[in-house]
Image 1 (cartoon, rainbow, N blue to C red):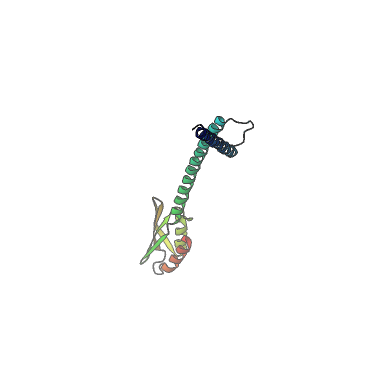
Image 2 (cartoon, rainbow, N blue to C red):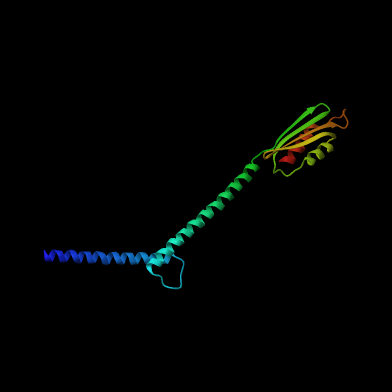
Length: 166
């Protein structure tokens, strides 16, 4: 029994020695993962520093994810506004012409652009309105031919307005 007890004790010592070597290797690896410090650290200091460093990295990740989320939401809103295709409708009412258009707010033209085209095509403007509803603009222009016998070239107006909005 004495011999059996001794071998068990030796086995425990070898196991403990191997555990210490393994822990030393792990602490060495941990120290290489931390930002450099000029002085040597004890194991408890290293563990505390590693814990603080991991918490700092977690906070940075949360901030980064928050910023990224805001950027993605902003990009989505911009893209959503760009996806609104203009809708153009022209009604010929004899010597009068009604132009209706719905667009996104980000379109690069003004109501005056519509009016100029109509006037160049021989129309007097009776009324012109622009309403903003959400992220859309609704334009309505009612015009009358300057010379009722000649009228207004509806197809020409339609083509010019289409080139303006596309």
